[in-house]
Length: 215
Image 1 (cartoon, rainbow, N blue to C red):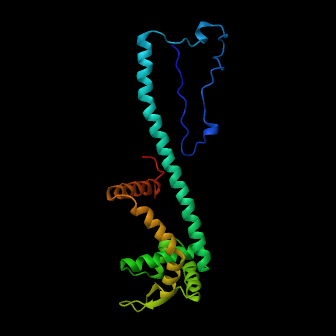
Image 2 (image 1 turned 135 degrees about the vertical axis):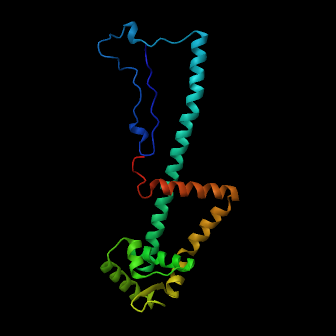
Image 3 (image 1 turned 30 degrees about the vertical axis):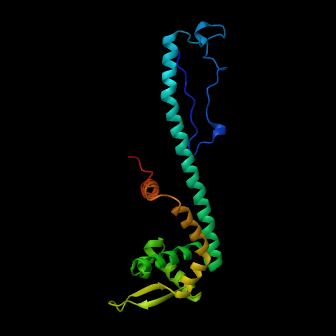
């Protein structure tokens, strides 16, 4: 019985230029070209044609679904590239490095949520040492981006807050970009926005901690 190998569909990390394809010119070892066993004969009877058509009808939606999914992941990759470029521009405008910017973003977000941030908590969030956190805070304080405040209930502890100048600088640098992003989001209906949220949250969980661990 002759088994026809189905062509592979290039995946997210699998360039189409190197995707394996079936090569009809390659024959099984030991079978001459004129051998009946080496020749794939066309199916001409009605039953075979019907079966082939049914198989094609089943396979085509599967392949199209895979290709659509890959196109979505490529769009996510393009967005990540644009987001990285925006972060780089922001860090340059604020005269900070990537880790400093991540610290500022965390402080601003914590303030929005009404949360307090200590040096220890910031160190854990950034996954850096206490010594590195101290140097980072000294840099940001020198630039006028953060200030240290006494903890309201623990005299031995400090809290870190972003200054009004830091908030103003971030709004100036990111304001136009955020406005354009909001315009894109508001162009979708409420139901579509919920679908996007579910998709992004699911994608985040898939690539998050232990996302690559075998299930």
